[in-house]
Length: 159
Image (cartoon, rainbow, N blue to C red; front, side, top):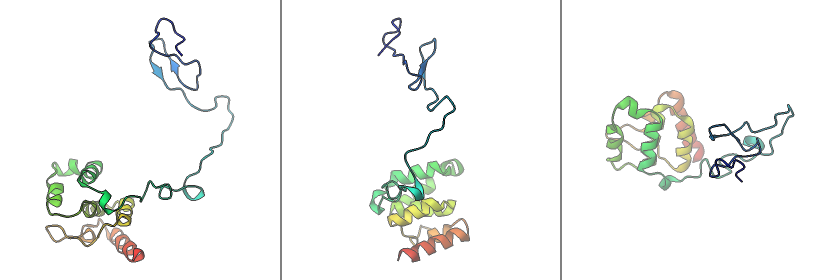
């Protein structure tokens, strides 16, 4: 409810918990939490002591066919590959080879050494021995021996 009659269209909050309004009528969030030095306790839990991301259906819930070209492009941009490559040529070359997007993502993640993404993709059904135009697989593209071992170990464990 507006309490400032000079600016009826802009609400002013009477509670510091919700926000404050400065003299220019700009709303800015306030620090949420106790301001009297008391302590609070969180009522939700994450990780081993509560719901994990996979159990909540967030991480690892995607399957092979849930990945598409847009996911490849987003990952390509997110990992800064566009900045390094200067173009989408390598990404487009992979997409034009009729390789499933989840397998392309695995190749890219392996080359970046992105172990969490590799695990997510392998859980989704990515195949690590799919070859690109140069005959290279995700194993061949792996950033280091640790990533190679992780991919092979995960695949053996999954089987």
